[in-house]
Image 1 (cartoon, rainbow, N blue to C red):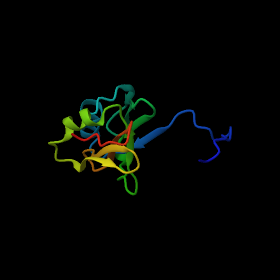
Image 2: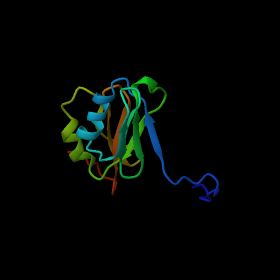
Image 3: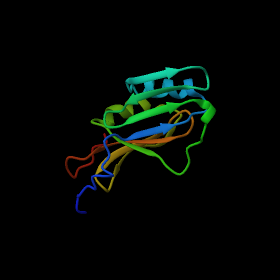
Image 4: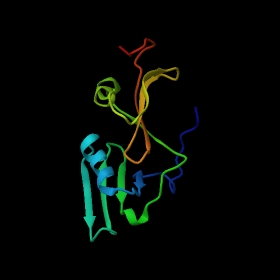
Length: 135
């Protein structure tokens, strides 16, 4: 394991992921209603100057005006949740599944979906023992 010595100049006080969706309202609905992330703040001085911030529990997800649209490429998001098996029930019949619920050799169970614009999100729960947790 690496030595955990923080450089005081680069130690992060808040992690914020910014997305610039093409369809702001559709993507907002997904994160707010489907995933249930609470809104921290929102603003809007018109179609080209709107934004919303969500609390994910450990980071902030920020959606910004579609006029700044940038497709997300070359990355994905992994979120540790308390009960991936229960959450899987919500998504298992959806059309946005990348891979279904599976045990991983590195010690967690996970599944992966996409948001409405194709941004990949993996949900996982760490195993508490060596036995498979998929039923």
